[in-house]
Length: 384
Image (cartoon, rainbow, N blue to C red):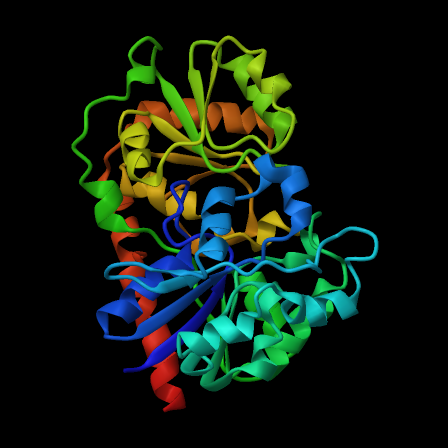
């Protein structure tokens, strides 16, 4: 049986969402591969910020149990390290990055050896914390999935760009989710850099038949929805302006707040629902009227290929976004605003133009994870 070791960020069964790695893993499983799914190392430091950690109980459970084998899924594990590579004094230097996996309890290598994943057909790395696996695992093909401009994240050390460059140089194949990331990787690696944008689980969003969510029953339309983390890349000034200027619209935010959202909460036409399980998201989208991507425009967001765009369109929602490079590159059936006033006007236009248009569903279908996986298999076949 062929084996893949996938070093990712989130838990396999995360209730809050599933990224590209999850869907590619599903496709590999369908082809008969055996998968080890590693998620970002946990540490004693995380206990101090427990409510800010993604899937904390799942991480602890995987560590305590020395991993878990999911029926029809992978073997999943989360290592505990004494030296997490974080943007804190004494922990943000290159030595820590190189030794994070050497100070795991129990030894990560011993877990991998026990599960027979020290020799694999494919080593797939998305999480920078696992880059030293390239030197410890015996693999036939190595892959780096470059999904963000890591140097732009405030919680990632600035020297992460050095690690990123090392990964790009060493691996056999680079998959980059944005055109700007392709350009970045191609300056370092001349061959085997592929554009592999995000996608959507089309059937999950298109065919939801559930009833209207209870939270929607006492609010008026039009309903404008945002699904995703409420983090520092959101343009809070824009959202304040839009909420003030569209008082007859209800703005629904679904996601875990990681920043101060008091400026939003003060508006009577804003509903903060917190995090919802991934399986329920299509219902909240289906009964909304417009989906928004209100990101600040900067180096980080111009390197983001937003999952929510595909998910909104897959539910038939018209989409209004700020003017991001990747949104432009995708040529999606999406309204793009260059100013706060235009954002307001386009929300009104999107609502008036209506939802459930054929072009929305067709775009989502053509950009499904199944379509994306064809690029993965073609790249691997070219290495055979």
